[in-house]
Amino acid sequence: MIKIVENDLFDYGLRIYQSESGFKFSLDSILLAEFVELKKDIIGIVDFCSGNAAVPLILSTKTNTKIVGFEIQKYPFELAYNSIKLNKLSRQIKIINDNLSNVLEYILPESVDIVTCNPPYFKYDVDSNINLAKEKAIARHEIETNLENILISARYILKNKGVLYLVHRPERLAEIFELCKKYKFSIKKLQFVYSSFKKSALMVLIKATKNGLDGLIINPPINISEYNSYKNIFDRR
Image 1 (cartoon, one colour):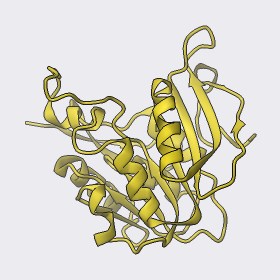
Image 2 (spheres, helix red, strand yellow; image 1 turned 90 degrees about the vertical axis):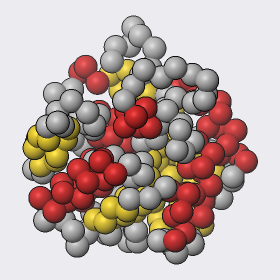
Image 3 (cartoon, rainbow, N blue to C red; image 1 turned 60 degrees about the horizontal axis):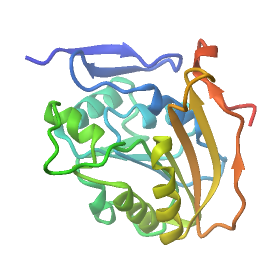
Image 4 (cartoon, helix red, strand yellow; image 1 turned 30 degrees about the horizontal axis):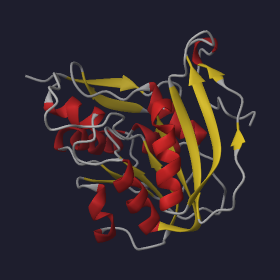
């Protein structure tokens, strides 16, 4: 039997449901939500690969705009749905249990300002022997979606000059650049995240603009071991 626990969502004054032995949100989701630049006039945020809705929940503390999340797996979707109810945020956040490839069944084309995504990081080969429970395998490997599907779906719903925020592994950067060029996203900012500056980067945060002009800023690197809290970690940018 899977045990559900109710945890603090770090420093955000919210609670979140998680599986004690299964699905849990990670630091990646927190940093992605913190990396998003929110303007007062934004209309609509859509979060792909929402898991238990850590990104939408954090963003709700920073903006009053409507947020829609997509999560294909039933169990994480249920955790997300109940976490949203627990925090009395059902009027602001809606979670949809479907593949993001079907996004146009729920969201009008070119109608939102921001898409966020903490995707599966690893490529999937049907011949691979992935020693993980199905839930974790889908969350970590490109079984149900992949980078190209994410770019295509984001392009459908983003307004012209709308922004995609993505967190990923640095070793996939060349592919991310290639796909962004293919689908006419201009990468505007990169931020590398380290556990120690003596080690390779753990992850990279990416800001890409639909039909944007060229011009890339590489923000100062972040060493997460230097912080006790990640709230407002990027305010210095």
